[in-house]
Length: 263
Image (cartoon, rainbow, N blue to C red; front, side):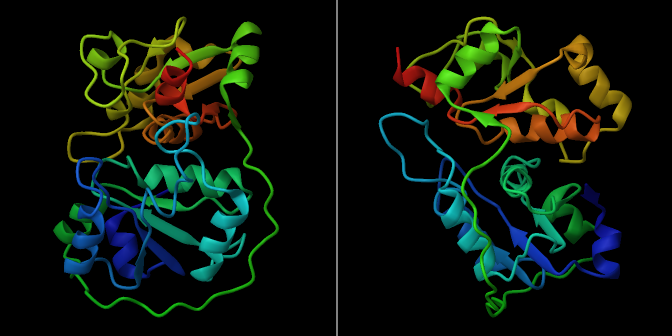
């Protein structure tokens, strides 16, 4: 599930995606890609490629249309069994979104570069500025993502006893501050497990004992539903759960920004 920089330098996977992005400046990630990226990497944009159009409901980063997303992957020659590597420079915040989307649609789950782009550079990797040519393949017939729910599904499974996990920072969870969405607070009944607890400040994924400590007794819940502000950084927590063998957790795709729209 993880690839270390040394492994990458020894022999790159078939397809590499650069998912660097900034919520504060949506153009920053693509600009950084043009300045330098891992050789052979293609750029995928959170807003354009990994999300659908924003509407009244569905949150700030709705899931993309499954067929459109499959077509996007096919444009880069990604088949269901293709070996893919994904990286960012934000502690997996955006790379994990692509990991979840691909796995949810039935593709081979991509590996994430441990530590992101900076660890590649620190290991002696050299930035490349060449944009690789596209070699499209046929897209799969994709109709729906699995392992996710909308607000109605959330209400149903929460009523059946599922444990809801808020992945945002503690102050946002507590309602002490809300820099993005119009309403502060959290969904009633949710516990807090900030997504940043999955990695060190350098972006390295913590070992399994630390992952278990991050989750604590929540790992014993029969059904886990994870959300964040818009369904993006929650995927870091979902990646952590998968590392621990809990790949049965559900993503509330619209997350807090969708919940707010119904208040």
